[in-house]
Image 1 (tube, rainbow, N blue to C red):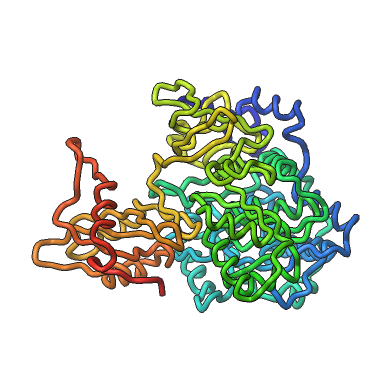
Image 2 (image 1 turned 135 degrees about the vertical axis):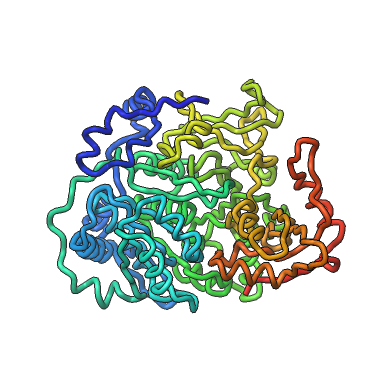
Length: 559
C-alpha cells in the first residue's frame, strides 16, 4: 500500500517547532471528514484539567498509594503548572520531545501534564527499560530531556540516565523523587504564559514494544487520543460516578491512554498502583472503590486469588478489560462471582481501542471474542489478495478517528502500514462473525506477550548471537499458566561447547536488556528447522520445547 505523505501544514508548523508533522500520514479528506463529523475537535487533556480544577477542584484526581489520601484536581492543576514553569526554564517548549521514564506515581501524572501544557511532545517509557532500550528511544526521538526517578526498585536510574545523556549530546536529565509534589513542586513559581493548546499537533510519541527488532515511534495527537477516549467512555457506559484503577504501567499506552486519559478527560478519580502486589490491589480497590480497569489476565487471576483469601469486597470493580490473550472461562466465572464483568478487547498503540466487549454483551461473545468495534471504528478482515472476509480468518485492517497519524522518521514501515484512504494494517489475523464481533486467531507478528508486556524475539535474538560460542539463536514464546507466555531461547552452539541459561541471562543483563525480556528457558539444538527457502520454522521449535517438557531443558526465573 502506497501512502501519499501529507505535508500541507508542515511549512507553518515547522515555524513553531512541529517538525514531527513532516511524517503525518492522515490525508486531508480523512482529516476533514473527522472534523466535520465531530469525531475530531479542539478538546485537549490540559483543557479538561483546567475545567475539572474549576468545576471539581476538591474532587480527588489521583491516588497512588494505599495509605495516601490522594491529590485533588485543584492540586494537580497547580502542581502541573509549576513543573511546566520549571521545564520551560530549562528550555523546553513547543514541539520538543520529553522522555518520561517514571513509575505509576502521582508525580508522573504531574510531569506528563506539564509536558502537554508547554505544547511539547510526551514520550513515555517503561521504567523497566534499561540503557539498551532507553538509548535507542532517545536517539530516534531526538529527546531534549529525560525525566526519571533517582532510584526505583533498587535500580539506579539517575546513573543510567546520566550515561544515556552523556552518549546523546543535547539531551538533559531531570530527576524526580517520590513525594516531590508536596515538598518541591509547591515551591516552584507558576507559569503565566502558557502556549495555546493545539489539538491537531503531535503530542504523544510512544514506541511500540513491537514485533520488529526496531520499535516503531507512533505519533498521536490530542484529536486521535481524545477521540479514542470518548468512544471508549461511551461504549462501556462510564459516568461521573465511576473511578479508574490502573495497575498497568502508565509509561506505555495501556496505562496512559486507557487509564490516565480516561480518568482525567472525564474528571474521575485515578487510582494508580506502582508495583504489582495482589494484596495491595485488593486494599486499593476496597478503599478507593474504582469501577473500571484494563490489565493483563495475569493481574485478574492474582486479584481474584487475593480477594478470596482476604475475604475482600471487590464489587465496586464492575469492569475488568483484558487484551492480548484469551481469558479462561473459569476465570470469567470466578470474576462474575466477585461481581466483576470481564470484557475481552482488541487494540494497539497504533489504533487504540478497536473492539471492546460491552458489559451487556452475551456471555458467549465475552468468552470467545474480542468484542464488536466501538462506535466510529471500521473493521475489515482481508485475504492476501485484499478481498473482504466474513466468518473466515484473514488479516485485520482498522480505520478509526483514534488511529495514530503515522510513524516518526520511518517512511518504509509507514508505507507498509497506512493506506491513503485511512486504513491501518494490523499484522494480526482474526475473524469477524456475522454479528460483527471480532476474534483474534493468530499473529503475523511473532511477538511474545509475557504478563501483558510485549517481547520482540528479534531484539533478544540479535543480542544472543553476539555471545561467545553461539552460532545461531531463535527466541520463541511458549505457554505459561500464569503469565500467558514466556521466552525460550533455542540455541545452536559451536561444536564442543555448551551454552547455559545462566550464561544467556548473565550476558543479556550485562548488555542492559530489560529483565522481563530475559529468556526463562534454553533449548540446545543441533540445527534450526528451516523451510526450503531458509526461513526458520519457529512453530517446530515450539512443538519441540513442549514435547520435551520443563524437566528436559534448562529453566530459570526472573531475578
